[in-house]
Length: 80
Image (spheres, rainbow, N blue to C red):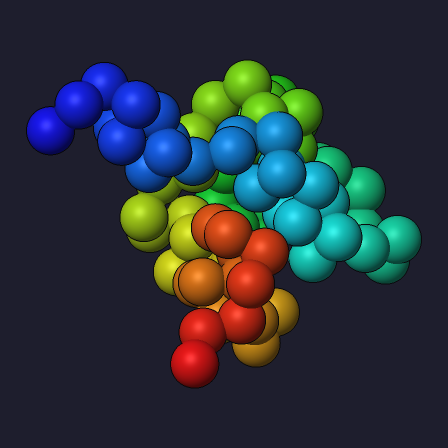
């Protein structure tokens, strides 16, 4: 497999972070939403800024909380 194909498969962490921020909405602070997800405010901030990749466990919690698909959270496109 060429390195270009691997780059195509790499997640866009900034876009994932924007979708996490969208899920959080304006109803919760980072600290409050972090408590809901079982993580700290600092870690949530890193996810929202695209500085860190969310764990599968966190992605599943976001899916459950928001009702959005994992496809949408990760890629921005709803699954088929």
